[in-house]
Image 1 (cartoon, rainbow, N blue to C red):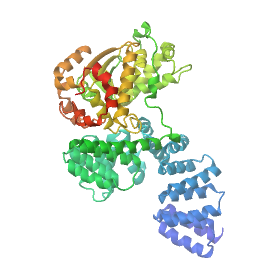
Image 2 (cartoon, rainbow, N blue to C red):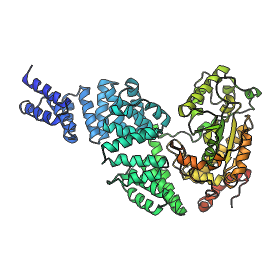
Image 3 (cartoon, helix red, strand yellow):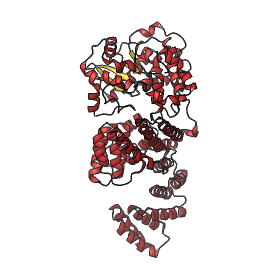
Image 4 (cartoon, rainbow, N blue to C red):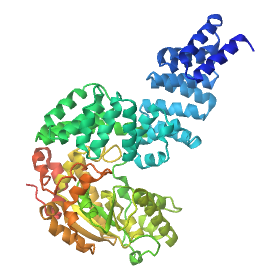
Length: 605
């Protein structure tokens, strides 16, 4: 073996032992004799990269790739170096070249996916990372990158499934930091909290992790803990740090200080999703100050950024039709046979707690959850999973819901019910009767009637103008209102579409429904709760009237934008909130809502 190769082998052993500096010195001695040796160039690049000298390493990887244009490994190395240098466009070019040579090689797929994440091509990134994950599901770097693509697309249930069984101790520090945030995004709060504590014990100067921990604590209504964490932040953490500080300060009643943190952070360029979050927080601060005009101006900017961020996540910039699933509807009266109970081994059919978003369903959910014989499933898409099973059946036709539901066999109904209950048990093991709180399940009435003929419904109404304003003011997420709630007018049309669909389908589909109004619930909670519990054949328990104490002590998160309100005692503070914004409700918006104001007994003035 040539002396040069022996020295390069020795250098490789040094690199594998983490002795990059020694390896660099040895390789440079080799290159003094053979400066054009490609293997030496690649090893020197690796030695530099291992020492954090990313730009010189990339330059050498580029040389190696140009000299070995048919070697996919050279392009993969170059792509990874570009990622280290924060150049996703360069990485994209390198990994595309590697894939043209190596096909569906996992390393090339992984790199391409990471590059596309950096370029905010989220759907494309998810596609290639899903392929990589299918090939090497146990590879930690592949799993974390795939999980990141799920997080960016806000597919949080899939994200939670992807992260099941991940061993944080087997990951390096950077991977642990990524995992902690992904766990927080997926709702695995306890895992995230423990891992953040470990990370900060190991890296006390890691302010980015400290800020993310504060955001998680605020989301769990642990405001004092979040404030204590933020006091230890000593560096500039950009938009995320400003968001965390503003949220905590606002919830502590220090609104002016919150705005002082927000406004400087809004100037530098940043991702659209972060812009939207900061603007929504700015609107909340202005609202807390009673500055309606400033709040609406901030909301216009928030929804503008949110809508653009939504389009980033859609292929070909073609958004789906808003509320497109409302086209699925019954055209005729459901057969009497649908009323027959399903005989299987599953629990008694659920209670479905529904209402247009921001109608107060979370307040009522907390009250119901305070009863010993009820267990609440908090905004989890268990029914949607069962519906997807049905829609995948042979001969299913969304355009003919009457026939599609009528043709279901007893075995298929039993299977769909099994799918539903398996999904429920992913989140809780109900000991009492299940209350499935998912507001827009009201737009799935025919499916519920077919699968759960003994179900009961609780429909909560609220002044339509208050609903519309509150929905417009919330950051529901890319998949939950980015387009439907973009303005007061679009939100009013969404309200009318949903409530009209419900009223029409109620004429065709049997359902046992108890209706109550949010305003009545907060004004006379005892009387309203007694009537509701009588409908459910249960008696009122005292704990139900003090549900805010249980919510404040709750360790797991409350899956709703109103998570901050439900830890407060029942009060009428949100009643007629819309009147402060009356000037922003134009004639067209009020005309859209007028039939519903009249129908539900509300006034405009």
